[in-house]
Length: 145
Image (cartoon, rainbow, N blue to C red):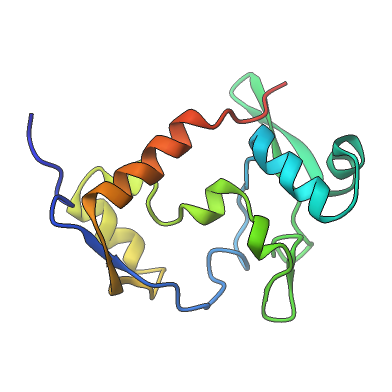
């Protein structure tokens, strides 16, 4: 099997630009673990959290639960220059930018770097760390309806 392009690790350090949290439409799909942690943080039941902060999204005939966005496409939890639920932010957010599509090739990684100033700078993340992010994303069940 061919070694992944990130076999020697990749550099990434969040620059707190909020580009991945704001300005553009997108989805933050939640796992059952994410829902549990977020609801607890906000002292809500899971049903209350779903009703107040989530939307059902049609993904080709199946449905997933995503956080809602503000009218300007900011994440519902982006406030005053940062994430209001940072310590319990969803796995999708915690694992960025170590997502499978970005790790398919050097070209894919460098392509996302054009929109994220933290990619290719800062801390070196080892191959093991990167693959742990990928494994967690595979293992944690997204909420589907």
